[in-house]
Amino acid sequence: MVTSPDLSTQDPAHIIPSGGIVGDNLGQFYGEVVFAIAPSKIQKGLIWAGTNDGQVWYTKDGAATWVNVTKGISGLPPLGTITSITPSTFDPATAYISVDFHLVDNRDPFIYKTIDFGKSWKAVTGNLPKHPLSYVRTVTEDPNCQGLLFAGTGNGLYYSLDDGAHWTALAADCLMHLSRGPWCKKSFTIW
Image 1 (tube, rainbow, N blue to C red):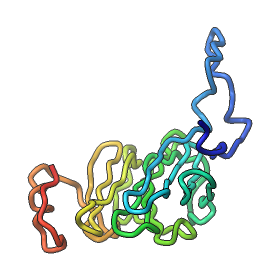
Image 2 (image 1 turned 180 degrees about the horizontal axis):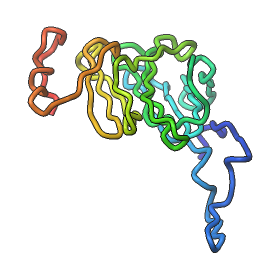
Image 3 (image 1 turned 30 degrees about the horizontal axis):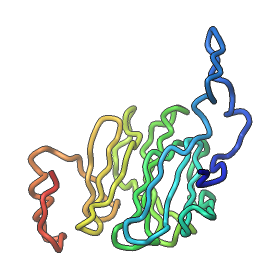
């Protein structure tokens, strides 16, 4: 069953045989694929998808029609891998994405947030440090505490208490403090 059209850029330069000494041609080279997909937990039929060539899409009707929202991401360099998508558990129009460019030799952190179904996006990378392993592999929103985000980079784990404006390296001893802070309306345990 097909659930979507090709959501990639469909650039022929990225659709090549896998090659090698003996051309095995078992499939396409690692390019032009959906890399991240995330259904909403609060709106039936809403699914977000991201490709490894920098495209971001959503569907509100369970995959019958897809909307490309990549153009709304201001300042996004081309050909990044959308490594994760997190639909908000508080608002269906809100989602977060992490984008990794280290395969094209850009190791800066990239995290974006939309509050209008992708019409516009805001960088929420804040003060995440820049270094050779700072590319972001994943971002997630805490399902119980709005504004509490977690990001995993090439060599660290960070949290933000203010929706990505400021980030702090996560230390093992702070996990319990995060779960009981005044910013949370519920008391819960993270791990």
